[in-house]
Image 1 (cartoon, rainbow, N blue to C red):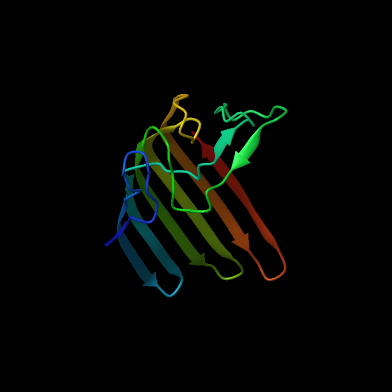
Image 2 (cartoon, one colour; image 1 turned 45 degrees about the vertical axis):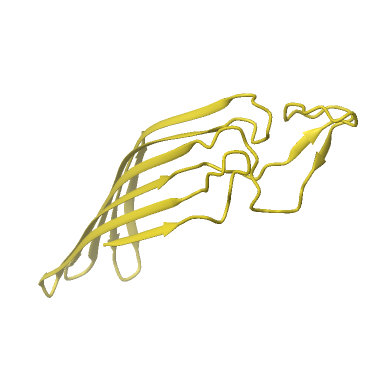
Length: 173
């Protein structure tokens, strides 16, 4: 089990919010040597990551007359950087939360003239993120991402003295 809290490095100078992050991880692992020819390894892991503010490097964009413009290239557009990498003057702090489950199973079996390996992996997670669309002091919009994801992979491998054969399957939702 582990937990990590990070925060206070980046600050939104308009709202005073900081990009506090918390990551929590729990893992269960097992190894079974069932006999001299069969080994099974498995683990199950859960990760949760939350972030109070989605702060991104903000650059003040403007024209020679000082007007703030959307982040699109056009003649006369200038980029101004105040030099402070911790200064994020955006109109909305946003935030994110992601929960992910990971599982892994490895089976190794030794036969007289070859060995067999099976690798199985599954990831299932969901999360959402909300952040300031333009990353500037201009109130141009918000972007939201909602995700529900899953990945499965399976590999079978046969190994002989002078040969290797196998197959691999991968599916990403």
